[in-house]
Amino acid sequence: MAALLTGSLRLCSVFVIVLAASAFGSGRSVFADFIDGLAAYDSGQLRDAYEEWLPLAEAGDLQAQVALAGLLQVGGRGMDRDLPAAAAWYRRAAERGDPVAQMNLGDLYAEGQGVERDLVQAVAWLSLAAEQGRLWAAQRRAALVGSLSETQLRAADALSARLRRDE
Image (tube, rainbow, N blue to C red; front, side):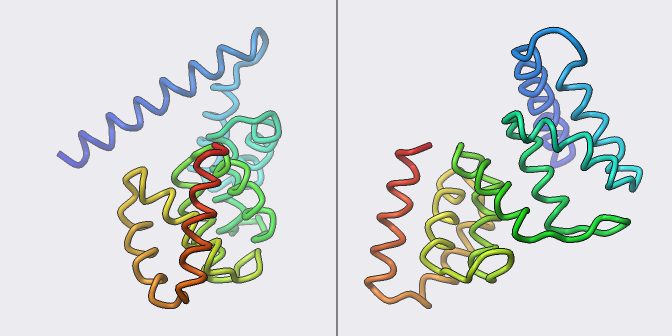
């Protein structure tokens, strides 16, 4: 059942990417570039994946922004980790409502990786991802809430409300 669900979700994601790619007009499709990046990533050619995804991410492609951020967060196989750049790409996608980016950005804030540690920011971003069904984000948020004062918790709630409106 899980494999069927995962396959269905991947197919839906591909469909969304294809629709987004059609908006860019003629020439090499965005979809092909993103798939080329996935193939490079899957074969361990992280630098090639980076080079495929960077122009897409810069052009505003949400999937490419999240993929690029993840690549920069993890690094390896010829790619240096760049946590500040990963946080910046996650933020761009998170501000547009991507739950994976919101969850990962929240975790970077919680750990102080690539950004200054800020539990208010962490809880705010994790809250947004949790609202979109990300169980891990809800669990991580719950674990962090006990570390916040009432003032900080109110600030996190206000920030998540503002971010939700700005999406």
